[in-house]
Image (cartoon, rainbow, N blue to C red; front, side, top):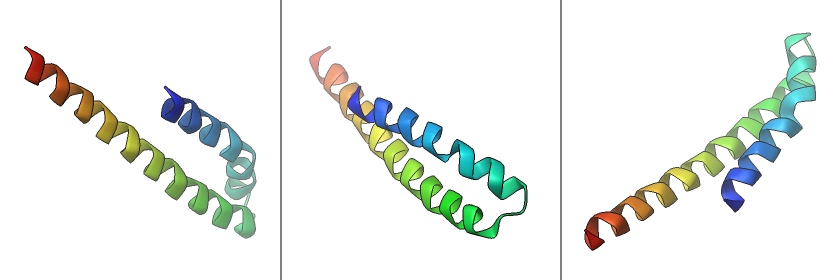
Amino acid sequence: MDLYDTLCRLVREVEEDMKKATGGNKAAGTRVRKSMQEIKDCAQQIRAKVLEMRGTEDGEA
């Protein structure tokens, strides 16, 4: 659940820069792209954990 909480926090943190970027602020756009990469990495970690849990359940059945 820690990874999910981290993902939610990252999404909340990028909200203000996203608004600025859609308004044309180029620096905010750069920050949004950096944040999106962090979000992608965190989401990938969650996907790996879910697959790991699924594999454990399949082995026990």
